[in-house]
Image 1 (cartoon, rainbow, N blue to C red):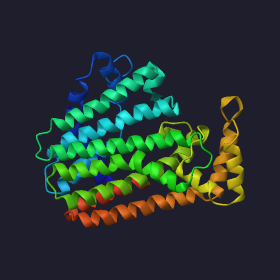
Image 2 (cartoon, rainbow, N blue to C red; image 1 turned 120 degrees about the vertical axis):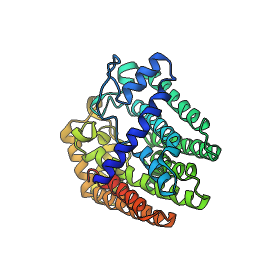
Image 3 (tube, rainbow, N blue to C red; image 1 turned 180 degrees about the horizontal axis):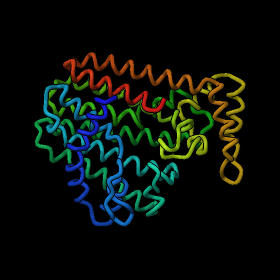
Amino acid sequence: MTVTVEVLHRTRELLLPALRRAVDRLDAHSRLVASYHLGWCDPDGRPLTADSGKALRPGLTLLVAEAVGAAAEDAVCGAVAVELVHNFSLIHDDLMDRDRERRHRPTVWALWGEPTAILVGDALLCLAHEVMEESESPSAREASAALSAATRELIRGQVLDVAFETRSDVRLAECLDMAAGKTGALLAVSAELGAVLGGAPATVAAAYRAFGAELGLAFQLVDDLLGIWGHPERTGKPVFSDLRARKKTLPITWALESGTAEAAELGAWLATEPPSGSDPDDRLRWAAGLVERAGGRDWATAEARERVRRALLALDAAGADPLRHARLVELADFVVERDL
């Protein structure tokens, strides 16, 4: 995956100065909190050089801009905007999920409290739309509207995700719809913005949007696999984290609908309250085994690869030149194979 590593490294080089300028607009405390969340400093503001994430979404924006014949620099505002929206959602997601760690560090709400997490997340969302509105691109208005619609769709997915926590009858189709909003919408618009800001026709932008949407579902499927079977040193979260939170993720929901004996046992376990507020690891390992024996793990792995296949069909329809096409194919493979 050397090309993908090079692409994401170049993305950070183009993205970081503009992203820092955007964050610098915040008040001093919000700027400190946002900078900490982005991996730029410790809680006291001392600079860090740690990796601040894969920059997958802005990388997709810049790659697509080049694929439609523009310079990557023409789409930097879109790359910054999608990265800000992504991080708004992460800060709020950590709070809603009560996750106390991200990338092996305390999360924003765990350090500064819930009100600060809400407000700093909101501030990043506002910055994203400011950045888009200030773009000098002839297509800035179209790009800004696309980002707004995608953000609304992302929030719709989050609303469903929260609602599922209190339901015992969540169906797989509903779960896929939730994932299409929560994760697919932002990856879809990340690709779409590259095409729009690169001056591509509407049909080409739509093809890239479809590419990103399918890639987003693949990404969520892999995330859900990692949320049960991922290695903490790679994910930055405790083992069995999604089972610990009793989240109705895609492999779990598929297992519940499998009609197997394991499905019945899993459903009964999910319906009970954990002892003392948390299940011991051996009980979580047992629940993970139920999901696996019911077929949830194999289905999610196969479905992630199927979504990448569909994404590549949409990419073919976009008609990129062979070099840019190959880089986007590799980026898609990186999404689904990163830890499977």
